[in-house]
Image (cartoon, rainbow, N blue to C red; front, side):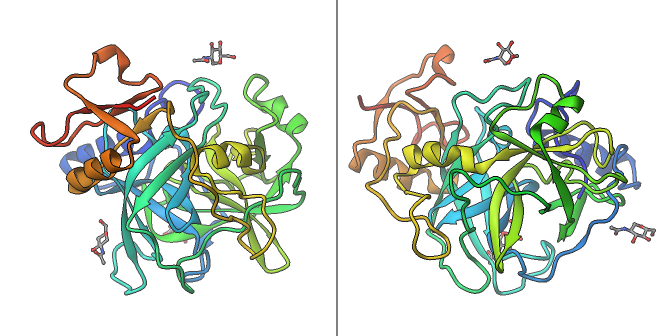
Length: 346
Ligand SMILES: *[C@@H]1O[C@H](CO)[C@@H](O)[C@H](O)[C@H]1NC(C)=O
Ligand SMILES: *[C@@H]1O[C@H](CO)[C@@H](O)[C@H](O)[C@H]1NC(C)=O
Ligand SMILES: *[C@@H]1O[C@H](CO)[C@@H](O)[C@H](O)[C@H]1NC(C)=O
């Protein structure tokens, strides 16, 4: 695993935006796959299908982010992995080696994406997003929901980020990588990032350095292992460089967003019961939330679905200024004939 989105200078674009650019340049110019700041050490290949809730997030077929299964129809990821204007996010559940067909994979497409409305691109506050996917996942040994933390869960000890992000040798990893990193307190983390640590952050860093999530791992899971369960405590968010012992990895603290997740999905992730908690609720209230609709392939089908459900009403032309405002659906990359813009029914 290598670079996360960094909090300084460059990386206010989703990871994939930059990576695609690098990739394009590299196809043309270079053969050194090593990313310039990549210094992840200590990571290693995860056991095959050992993290069945972790999935790569492809943007235009490039795996620049990751996500975690929280329900058959919902994945959680980072807000900075959701672009406000472009679509084409797809996921492959049940995957390990991205380059090989393993017959455990299920490809799904995002049909709705909700970045947290208060996501702040400078501080990475509220770096969380939900994707509704189609078709629903078939849960099995290889494809599972993550175990959710309770609202007051405050883990201490070792946590494990996993991802297909860059390693010290490559700009992405073809196989899922994992690394064990000690959690630190938010007070300790604030010493490195005085303005960027919130109650909704959680940090991890190895004293000796060199163990970290990095760019391309964004949006993916930080697990805490307890009683044989992989509890989803964090979402890979940001950090300065990667693996620098002075700059911890910063994650979105999932336990602080269970209410927000319920608001969007209607699912009560705090409900006890099966080991994945999540209990289906009444459908959620997504009216007035920022939403980006994705994927040409499901465009017509989804347009009909939205109309039938009376979630959205078509409008002829969306004002440019409304594109990222609540209540407006951005539907780009669909063919002009079939997919226009939509406004929420209020
Ligand atoms: C799933 O998507 C991946 C990445 O786009 C692709 O390589 C693979 O062939 C697809 N698998 C199936 C079963 O369609
Ligand atoms: C993001 O946070 C910074 C620092 O607290 C603040 O100055 C800025 O206004 C925030 N931006 C948004 C869009 O809320
Ligand atoms: C990176 O390359 C070095 C040298 O070839 C190798 O020893 C090391 O295992 C590689 N690391 C990873 C994570 O692949």
